[in-house]
Figure 1 (cartoon, rainbow, N blue to C red):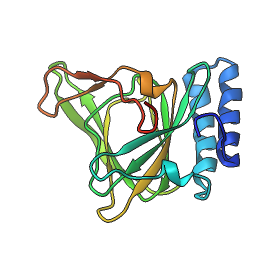
Figure 2 (figure 1 turned 60 degrees about the vertical axis):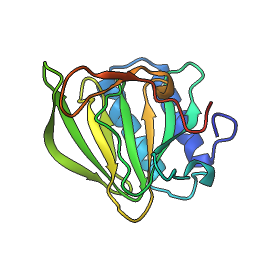
Figure 3 (figure 1 turned 135 degrees about the horizontal axis):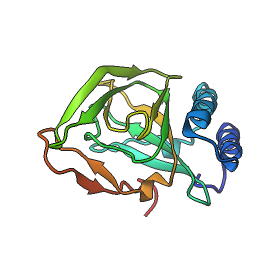
Figure 4 (figure 1 turned 135 degrees about the vertical axis):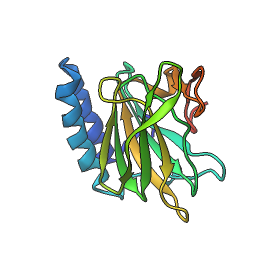
Length: 189
Protein backbone atom coordinates (compact mmCIF):
# COMPACT_ATOMS: atom_id res chain seq x y z
CA UNK A 1 0.00 0.00 0.00
CA UNK A 2 2.48 2.60 1.23
CA UNK A 3 0.83 5.63 -0.43
CA UNK A 4 0.53 4.04 -3.90
CA UNK A 5 -2.96 2.61 -3.70
CA UNK A 6 -5.23 2.92 -0.70
CA UNK A 7 -8.50 1.00 -0.38
CA UNK A 8 -11.45 3.37 0.01
CA UNK A 9 -11.89 2.96 3.81
CA UNK A 10 -8.17 3.53 4.44
CA UNK A 11 -8.08 6.49 2.04
CA UNK A 12 -11.04 8.07 3.86
CA UNK A 13 -9.24 7.57 7.19
CA UNK A 14 -5.99 9.08 5.88
CA UNK A 15 -7.89 12.03 4.38
CA UNK A 16 -9.70 12.70 7.67
CA UNK A 17 -6.47 12.58 9.70
CA UNK A 18 -4.64 14.76 7.15
CA UNK A 19 -7.40 17.38 7.43
CA UNK A 20 -7.34 17.25 11.25
CA UNK A 21 -3.58 17.72 11.41
CA UNK A 22 -3.60 20.55 8.87
CA UNK A 23 -4.89 22.88 11.60
CA UNK A 24 -2.64 22.58 14.65
CA UNK A 25 -4.64 21.83 17.78
CA UNK A 26 -3.92 20.40 21.19
CA UNK A 27 -3.57 16.62 21.31
CA UNK A 28 -6.59 16.44 23.63
CA UNK A 29 -8.69 17.95 20.84
CA UNK A 30 -7.65 15.86 17.84
CA UNK A 31 -7.00 12.44 19.44
CA UNK A 32 -10.70 11.76 20.17
CA UNK A 33 -11.52 12.73 16.58
CA UNK A 34 -8.85 10.37 15.23
CA UNK A 35 -10.29 7.73 17.56
CA UNK A 36 -13.73 8.15 15.99
CA UNK A 37 -12.23 7.87 12.49
CA UNK A 38 -10.38 4.73 13.63
CA UNK A 39 -13.65 3.22 14.93
CA UNK A 40 -15.15 3.74 11.48
CA UNK A 41 -12.11 2.19 9.79
CA UNK A 42 -12.02 -0.98 11.91
CA UNK A 43 -15.80 -1.41 11.81
CA UNK A 44 -15.26 -2.97 8.37
CA UNK A 45 -13.02 -6.00 7.95
CA UNK A 46 -12.98 -6.26 4.17
CA UNK A 47 -10.40 -3.69 3.07
CA UNK A 48 -6.99 -4.87 4.33
CA UNK A 49 -4.90 -6.36 1.53
CA UNK A 50 -3.99 -9.96 2.46
CA UNK A 51 -0.31 -9.08 1.86
CA UNK A 52 -0.48 -6.89 4.99
CA UNK A 53 -2.22 -9.52 7.09
CA UNK A 54 0.42 -12.26 6.92
CA UNK A 55 1.80 -13.60 10.20
CA UNK A 56 5.37 -14.72 10.76
CA UNK A 57 5.89 -18.00 12.64
CA UNK A 58 8.11 -16.36 15.30
CA UNK A 59 7.59 -12.58 15.33
CA UNK A 60 4.66 -10.19 15.17
CA UNK A 61 4.68 -8.17 11.97
CA UNK A 62 4.39 -4.39 11.58
CA UNK A 63 3.37 -3.54 8.00
CA UNK A 64 3.46 0.05 6.80
CA UNK A 65 0.13 0.91 5.16
CA UNK A 66 0.62 4.67 4.78
CA UNK A 67 3.30 7.21 5.63
CA UNK A 68 2.41 10.89 5.57
CA UNK A 69 4.82 12.68 3.19
CA UNK A 70 5.68 15.13 5.99
CA UNK A 71 6.13 12.33 8.59
CA UNK A 72 3.28 13.77 10.67
CA UNK A 73 1.73 10.29 11.00
CA UNK A 74 1.93 6.71 9.81
CA UNK A 75 -0.63 3.91 9.61
CA UNK A 76 0.41 0.29 10.15
CA UNK A 77 -1.15 -3.13 10.53
CA UNK A 78 0.11 -5.27 13.39
CA UNK A 79 -0.26 -8.97 12.71
CA UNK A 80 0.03 -11.29 15.68
CA UNK A 81 0.56 -15.02 15.41
CA UNK A 82 -0.61 -17.27 18.23
CA UNK A 83 1.32 -16.55 21.42
CA UNK A 84 3.21 -13.54 20.06
CA UNK A 85 3.79 -10.43 22.17
CA UNK A 86 5.81 -7.26 22.41
CA UNK A 87 8.31 -6.46 25.11
CA UNK A 88 7.41 -3.62 27.50
CA UNK A 89 7.97 -0.54 25.32
CA UNK A 90 7.06 3.07 24.69
CA UNK A 91 6.22 5.12 21.59
CA UNK A 92 7.31 8.72 22.42
CA UNK A 93 4.46 10.01 20.19
CA UNK A 94 0.66 9.78 20.28
CA UNK A 95 -1.02 6.69 18.87
CA UNK A 96 -4.46 5.26 18.28
CA UNK A 97 -4.96 1.50 18.06
CA UNK A 98 -8.04 -0.06 16.47
CA UNK A 99 -8.76 -3.79 16.70
CA UNK A 100 -9.65 -5.23 13.31
CA UNK A 101 -9.62 -9.02 13.75
CA UNK A 102 -9.10 -11.42 16.64
CA UNK A 103 -8.21 -9.96 20.06
CA UNK A 104 -5.29 -8.37 21.89
CA UNK A 105 -4.39 -8.01 25.53
CA UNK A 106 -2.73 -4.76 26.60
CA UNK A 107 -1.06 -4.05 29.94
CA UNK A 108 0.02 -0.48 30.79
CA UNK A 109 3.09 0.20 32.91
CA UNK A 110 4.67 2.97 34.95
CA UNK A 111 8.46 3.13 35.02
CA UNK A 112 10.08 3.71 38.44
CA UNK A 113 13.14 5.90 38.89
CA UNK A 114 15.34 2.77 38.86
CA UNK A 115 13.81 1.67 35.54
CA UNK A 116 11.58 -1.03 36.98
CA UNK A 117 8.25 -1.35 35.13
CA UNK A 118 5.18 -1.75 37.33
CA UNK A 119 1.76 -2.70 35.88
CA UNK A 120 -0.86 0.03 36.20
CA UNK A 121 -4.52 -0.86 36.06
CA UNK A 122 -6.02 -4.05 34.76
CA UNK A 123 -4.91 -5.73 31.55
CA UNK A 124 -7.32 -4.65 28.80
CA UNK A 125 -8.82 -6.93 26.17
CA UNK A 126 -9.33 -5.33 22.77
CA UNK A 127 -11.98 -7.03 20.64
CA UNK A 128 -12.85 -6.10 17.03
CA UNK A 129 -13.99 -2.49 16.85
CA UNK A 130 -12.29 -1.47 20.12
CA UNK A 131 -10.03 1.60 20.11
CA UNK A 132 -7.23 2.45 22.54
CA UNK A 133 -4.91 5.48 22.88
CA UNK A 134 -1.26 5.92 23.81
CA UNK A 135 0.68 9.13 24.29
CA UNK A 136 3.35 10.55 26.55
CA UNK A 137 0.57 12.70 28.06
CA UNK A 138 -1.92 9.82 28.52
CA UNK A 139 0.36 6.88 29.27
CA UNK A 140 2.90 5.62 26.79
CA UNK A 141 4.39 2.39 28.15
CA UNK A 142 2.71 -0.95 27.58
CA UNK A 143 3.05 -4.59 26.58
CA UNK A 144 0.71 -6.10 24.00
CA UNK A 145 0.00 -9.73 23.15
CA UNK A 146 -2.28 -11.82 21.00
CA UNK A 147 -5.16 -12.85 23.24
CA UNK A 148 -5.90 -15.91 21.10
CA UNK A 149 -3.87 -19.09 21.28
CA UNK A 150 -5.17 -20.57 18.04
CA UNK A 151 -5.48 -17.77 15.49
CA UNK A 152 -4.02 -14.59 14.09
CA UNK A 153 -5.08 -11.21 15.45
CA UNK A 154 -4.72 -7.93 13.54
CA UNK A 155 -4.88 -4.36 14.75
CA UNK A 156 -4.51 -1.08 12.87
CA UNK A 157 -2.34 1.61 14.45
CA UNK A 158 -1.78 5.26 13.64
CA UNK A 159 1.10 7.14 15.23
CA UNK A 160 1.98 10.84 15.36
CA UNK A 161 5.20 10.32 13.38
CA UNK A 162 6.67 7.81 10.96
CA UNK A 163 6.89 5.23 13.76
CA UNK A 164 9.30 3.00 11.83
CA UNK A 165 11.90 5.80 12.10
CA UNK A 166 11.32 6.85 15.73
CA UNK A 167 13.89 5.96 18.41
CA UNK A 168 11.93 4.31 21.22
CA UNK A 169 12.67 2.24 24.31
CA UNK A 170 12.24 -1.31 25.60
CA UNK A 171 12.09 -1.66 29.38
CA UNK A 172 13.55 -4.85 30.91
CA UNK A 173 11.03 -6.48 33.32
CA UNK A 174 13.69 -6.61 36.05
CA UNK A 175 14.42 -2.87 35.73
CA UNK A 176 17.63 -1.12 34.89
CA UNK A 177 18.53 0.86 31.81
CA UNK A 178 16.03 1.04 28.97
CA UNK A 179 17.27 -0.20 25.60
CA UNK A 180 16.86 1.98 22.51
CA UNK A 181 15.29 0.56 19.36
CA UNK A 182 13.86 1.67 16.03
CA UNK A 183 11.18 -0.73 14.87
CA UNK A 184 11.25 -0.30 11.12
CA UNK A 185 8.63 -2.19 9.13
CA UNK A 186 8.22 -5.79 8.05
CA UNK A 187 7.52 -4.75 4.46
CA UNK A 188 10.04 -1.90 4.01
CA UNK A 189 13.78 -2.43 3.74
